[in-house]
Length: 157
Image 1 (spheres, rainbow, N blue to C red):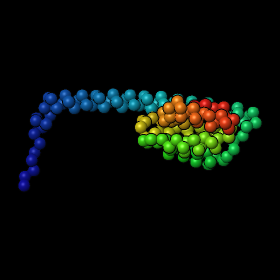
Image 2: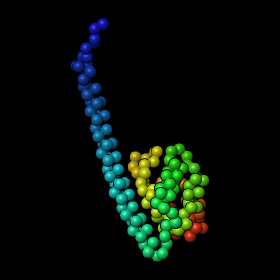
Image 3: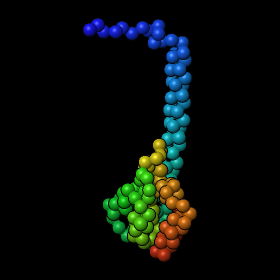
């Protein structure tokens, strides 16, 4: 059986070349826009982390100390990610982690342990605050803040 040769004149018809050119331009624009968004998000996240570290040091200077080891905060952060990633949010798991936060030093250790993570529906890495704001309505955030307040934590989402 003979192999069919490609008719390049037909395959590279003016209409097809124009269509491919338009698709290439659209793809390039999407790549540029996403690249700028990702760069901005990384810059913002790095600034937030530096601010959180400075705030954590200020809190510790007032005598508050973290209640747990760094590995526990990482576990809390991982549990929050699992609870909020993808379709639907396991609010009870988030509330359970927040009940473990005993002071502002704990809150900032948790924020730093969470760092920035990419969600299931996001192209950019986001902080814990951004995840909470994206996953919870005002009522849910109020419940989180009430849990934190009942433990003497002043941080609010």
